[in-house]
Image (cartoon, rainbow, N blue to C red):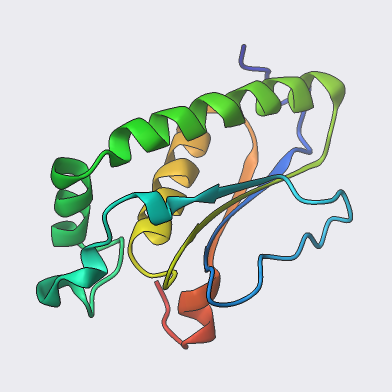
Length: 143
């Protein structure tokens, strides 16, 4: 069920990628968290020399994740869980939801997942979506 923008203009969704080498993302909304999906079970492209300097936004990393791993199944499951909450949050007038994807370095798998989730949310729901890549920001990289 997708609610209209006029009925629920206030749901703000923060989607983030992060590295498990550092702390879990903080919830600035004061609501106590949201979702944290662990991407470390997916084969890491960063283990292969040709992908080490790239991120989950680069086409060769995307191709690797979409053809050599079970990433599509992982994302489908994450989207299914998130959809349940968003439908409920919209119906109940909630204002904040946080969705986080973590991996070892916060560079390949989690970046890819956060990008894909943000795209899905923007295409599916009348909500405000903010996308952050915490580890990449920490390293001074602008994605």
